[in-house]
Length: 300
Image (cartoon, rainbow, N blue to C red; front, side, top):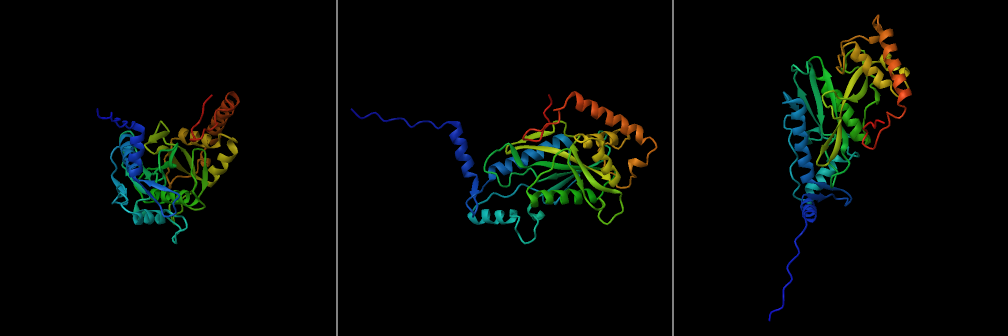
């Protein structure tokens, strides 16, 4: 009688997934980092779909040839992409033409009566082999303007390059001193930025196949508003400034032509109301502002 032949074991789904993922990645010349092309492209498309759900269709995207990167087909391709991403390159900046960063522009509508600009690239998993807790640098940035203008995209790129070139990140409560007008070469009093959760992204933290990321708004403020923010409350100063801007009707819009809120006759009463609420909240919930590893507030 012929010997019984053992049937080959059926591969489980997780093993198949690992093999598929391995096919979609290319090793860099340094042998330390893998580019998972399948992961990168699927995450890219997922972010585009999320933006459409949250913001609708953009009126423009810069650069105009915005598209998912091409698949890497050789070691030379992998080495070229690695070279593009290295922070030690001769220009000291990432090459925008190679899609490291794009800016989407959305026109006003009945729900959002302002122009919206948002980055696409800070959450891209350029140097990830597999899904992680955080995708890329873990965020995308929004600026809202009362009119269509060039300066929002310029400021967004400036902040994004800072993140790229310092391997850092930005999160809600952060305050940035620009040391110049938000409009390059202009005389706007807005010379600083607050980072806060974007109203249009109520879930705050979103998942891509490569990991999570937050959608945060950058809001321009004046020098004296910056000083006020720092003096209002040790832990809730940025929140307080946000509330002051909301109460006087500015919300999260950055209007380079506006004057300082400190010039308003009623500003003292607005400040006292917001500051009092923050102090009472902090007293009642002293641990409410603790952040977890993803930068999301943990409420007790």
